[in-house]
Amino acid sequence: MIRIAIPNKGRLHDPAVNLLKEAGLPVLEGATRKLYAKTTDSEITILFARAADIPEYVQDGAADVGITGLDLISETRADVEVMLDLKFGGANLVLAVPEDSPINFAKDLKCMRIATEFPNITHRYFENLGVKVEIIKVSGACEITPHVGIADAIVDISSSGTTLVTNHLRMVEKVFSSSVYLIANRESAGKIEKIQYIKTALESVLHAKDKRYLMMNVPEESLEDVKRVLPGLAGPTVMKVESNTSILAVHAVVNSDDTFATVNKLKNVGARDILVIPIERMIP
Image (cartoon, rainbow, N blue to C red):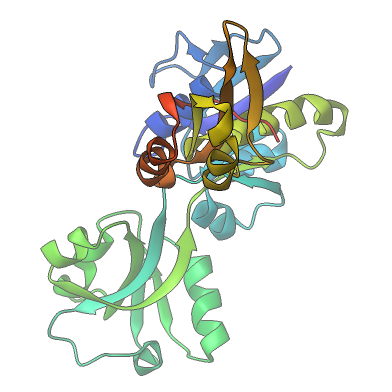
């Protein structure tokens, strides 16, 4: 049995559940108030946990696999295998001070107080700079601390910067960049094949997200012009259309950002009946 730990709530919960669904592992009877849930694979279950606890759950074997932020993995210093960047939940840990503070660089905070929910990352950051500071660990509402005299600056998560502006703070420097990762227990050796299947399934969704599948009919005399427009992953696939020997069916995978321009170029060189299809999964 494989147990996958995912965040039980918060901004990472829904994207994690959706990614598993897209990978063919939908969560069955799942709810944030439950501890466990089944998937469509009888050998894989879901464990709902606090995102901050998932690295240690995976390290200690309570879960074989986990989905959580790189910032939390680094903060807990959990001994886990970091397998795959899942490309969502991007955010930065930033050093911020009040808008009217004279501080402009991290080195200016020597011997000052820094409030944070991430004391280990913050300690390593200032240690690498050779700057001695007093780190004050808080468990929430970090942005308030400079305004009530608890700290001179904060190190906190910022996705868009809106929270900083709302609380009259400004960023001084970026401390750590994070996104959500797939991690695995180093001792789950007997389950490595199934864990690899999970990684491959998730990876196939990520590979497909920025790709589109194009299908079109092409007059035989236009094929070379179409090929120049459509290199595809390894060149387009070309097949004869049985009902009309002078028409060829051409299929190719292209980057989604290039689709608009590519379709127009294809029409200009003679392609017709062009279909643009999203790709759910693409396994290398």
